[in-house]
Image (cartoon, rainbow, N blue to C red; front, side, top):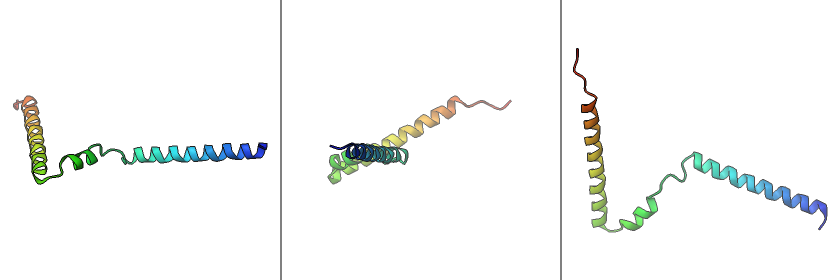
Length: 81
C-alpha cells in the first residue's frame, strides 16, 4: 500500500473513534443510560397481578421513606429556648 492510503486510513479511523467517544460521553452526560431497570421490570412484571405487586412494593418503599424522614425530624427536634 502506498503511504497516502495508510495515512488516510489512520486519519479516518481516528476521526470515527473520536466521534464514537464523543457520542458515548454525550449519552452518559445526558443520562441516556440511567434507566437501569426499565427492560428488566418490563419482562418481570408482564401480568396484571405482577403489576399490582410492583405497585404495592413501590408504595411500601415510599411509606418507609416517609417513616425514615419523620424519624430524622424527630431526632433533630430541639425545643425552643
